[in-house]
Amino acid sequence: MATNPWVVFAIASAAVFLVSVDATIAVAAFPALRASFAETSPATLSWVLNAYTILYAALLVPAGRLVDLHGARRLFLFGVTLFTLASAACGMAPGTGSLIAARTVQAVGGAVLTPASLALILGAFPAEKRSAIVGLWSAAGALGAAVGPGAGAILIELATWRAAFLVNLPFGALILWFALRRLPTLKGADAGEGLDIPGIALIAGGVAALTWGVVQVEAAGPAAPTVWGPALAGISLLVTYSLWARGRKAAAIDLSLFANRTYTMVTIASFVFGIAFSMMFLSSFLFLLGIWDYSQGLTGLAVTPGPLVVIAVAIASWRLVARVGHRSVLVAGGLLYAVAQIWLAVHVTAAPAYLTLWFPMQIIGGTAVGLLLVGLSGAAVTGLPPARFGVGGAVNNAVRQLGGVFGTALAAVLVGQSGAGIEAFRLCFLCLGSIGLVTALLCLPLPRASGRAVPAPAG
Image (cartoon, rainbow, N blue to C red; front, side):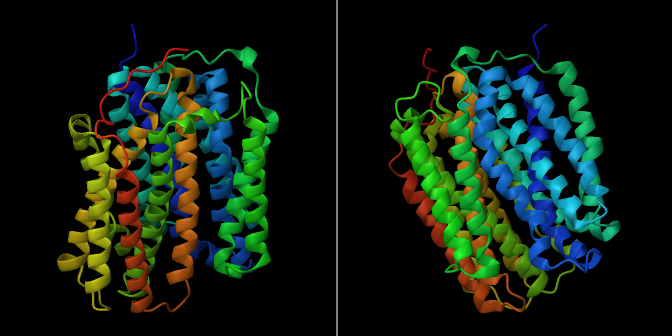
């Protein structure tokens, strides 16, 4: 009997949710890590966050190519296993060196299973449902990223920072158990195409170097050689890859994807939205802790309504996308996001006003994020052939992750310093509103009917 596609979706989305939680849960764990490893400098300890971010972003696209060549099920199982074992190593790490090393292994596992999970769900559903399904899959990942800091804050308050990593073990084992029994086998592309090792090295090295430069902004300032040096090296490697891949049959990224104007615009919009998404969560966490003096546990609860709205809107809006197209949904999402953030910038004060200000903006902002996730992820994969599910989705996801790195760095510059005041947060919220407007403008050129099903091309 064929596997129910919704079972495949549940397994794949659960894994992406877990990986996304882990990408942000360490934000909440950072103060506890500083207390536990007081002999370690904050700059060194920051690599508990940075090592994961850099490797995950750098490896998504190469992992997508591996999925295309060798099959989604095999690499999904490998990724889940590696991620779960690395989580155990994080939770039991005796020092910062071993913790950072375990986080790098976690990133490898997460980067492998993410494109594999996308390929699994796209292979399980017919072409006319792919756009909506990818939106729901992305919403599951975004929900994980959104609840990570809050869940981590509560876990750490109840136990220790180690619980933020050890909590992955039962969930990872359960996902693996179901995956072994219920996931179908999807045939990869013709293995004769081979693996573009030089191309993969150029992409991974370029993204890693660029990301490395960005994460140094908080500590060194934007003009420091440790920022622009790696950034320039990363850009050079990516330009070199574009020359290498031109006309190459089995390139790691098929650059012909970007000949499609819709795919290109959606990818740019995904990068911009990635900035807004990560910047919003870090700044919200810092605002509630630093300006309104909430405890870690209360902050975790205070930021929960937004993610819950995200998943509800994502589930409900796929029919809307199918009816009116991606453009209308994306423009509406960008404008709503801008309204929520600009309203905060104008009305927020140092006096707590959760029910009258923060909660309503959580609802509006969560609605906006839900619409954007469904629209961007769905538009990015509409029309991709099955043999390019992994790499096509991975490119879009990697671009959004890279945007997230920029967003985290920007939030750190604006409000990350100790003692940042209310005016700094108002400026941050204004920046977020402006980014929402840019996202809406980038989506205006999309075809009106981009949400309707597009048959996958043959080949």
